[in-house]
Image (cartoon, rainbow, N blue to C red; front, side, top):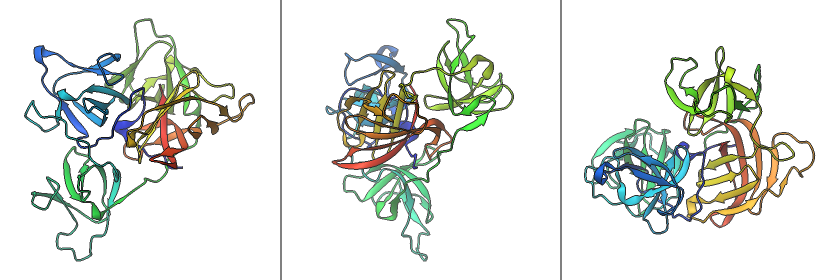
Length: 376
């Protein structure tokens, strides 16, 4: 099973408004705001939607699209798709505070691509990367045949593609020398350990009220804190680490917690045992799928700017008899298969506790797509 998705897009996706796709500037910086203010992050495209966080001036955000008015940018907010006012965003390397968001660009051909079609005796020795979409722009570097890169923008004339590299650099190249790639499947079956079969769901215990269980970047008590889990929170344990420390999944990150504060079980399931309270996503094309704790679902074809479709689980292996993973399920607009197994995004070191396959209409035709899921 393929389990590819763009990491920056993944996890909690709770929007309720339509959006048009835009990848003209994936990385944006928040410009200075009067009176030392911050940029509100909202659950929808408007000041009337819930304020779910703040971004400080100078911070960088990942833009995955714009709403139909182009006034609100959809960003990856700790793994959750959310909205910010586009007028406060500038290009990540811009110095002008008055830079405005560019218009949407064509979004086909995005994601992982491999350099191909370079002649053995090519004078450049590979694919030339330039600072802009044209031969008149200065050369940055040359990519050898077979290099895997991440394309984030297609030029309006559809002849040039822009990539973001692992060091944060960016450059343009002729897309006639690129071939879209679907990374190899990387799901793994549950692991049997002293904690039971992993990945699995655990509940935080013995943590005082108003305190948190720290999630650290290494399996020891002196490692840096990268997040916190409230008392009675549920968390997916991915694999055991050393001693009393286990690897867990939190939105947009993997970290480690002390197992003395965990007990197996928790969360919500349907009668047959399939986990609910999940957020899932994938790319090529970009899509988002949520299963709320009560079985309500939300699907959105982000890549085509479609409005979200809300429904309910109508069948999970038939409902009402004991079953096990993988679970087959249906809603009004998708047929899915959910498995509890480690799921890799194919582009980073992150792992997720569930893999998902969906058969659904995308871009005007039925498609089978794959992604990963995490707990809400």
